[in-house]
Amino acid sequence: MGRDSLTIKGPFDIRNSIESGQPLAFHADYGHKGSAFALSYSTSKGVIEAALKGKQLSYSWNGEYNSRSAREEMERRFRIKDNMPSIYERISTDEFMESAILAYNGMRVTQNDPWETTLCFILSQFNNIKRIRGSVRMLINTYGTEIEGSERKLFPSAEQIKGASIEELMKHGAGFRAKYIKHAANFCSGSLDLDSLYRKDYEDAKEAIMEIEGVGDKVADCIMLFAYNKMEAFPIDTWVKRVLETVYFKGRKKRIKELHQFASERWPGMEGYAQQYLFWHARSLKLRRKA
Image (cartoon, rainbow, N blue to C red; front, side, top):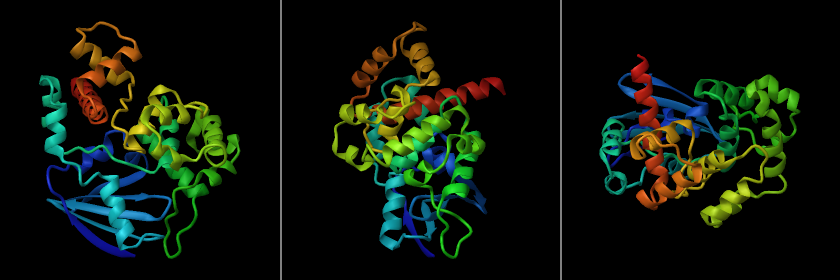
């Protein structure tokens, strides 16, 4: 196991970055170590453990990682190099967005492995984060490869999930999504080279990922944003649709296509970041009203 650390420049809210419905939150264990916020998660290469204290992000790794690849993992996963003041300048277009930025200053849009993201967001359909995390943990423990010298396992590949039956996947918390996971595993280990989508533009890559059974507009945009760093992606779920219609259209109902067009005109090139702040702020306001 190796260890290293990074000094964070600019605002960085690690907790909201991993709790706000992004793939990392789906299979990370996190809590507090003293005054630091800590997390641990499995990838296809090993296990990463990290703790943020002030501006210092300390992390350790095992498995196939080395010092260079582990640092790249942290920088990529949490988008450490993002210029947050510049991003905020581009998306801060109104009072609601300003309040979202103030409430969650430093929340990053994470960038994750394509297969991990695909599996997690297929599981996310009509589901909640707690159940998703539990399902992913069961899939890791059942199908993931053991890491030498560790009790933890790697995030299972599409090829490993492909070997599971639909009935087995249902037993591991996938429910009705099991058939979609099975199709995705077959498709991504045969017909579709997920890495090839990095080289495609947003529209073509989105069209390609939607060939997977069960991947609709919202899930496809989640994969485009959280796996492929395509900031034109603007995932629209119930919360995002509601907040857009309420805040920007005075309660008038709008079609998904109209909302995509609105986002592309209002936050061009930064739709993905805008969506994450809208989504999490809307969710949090709803929770506070219930409290």
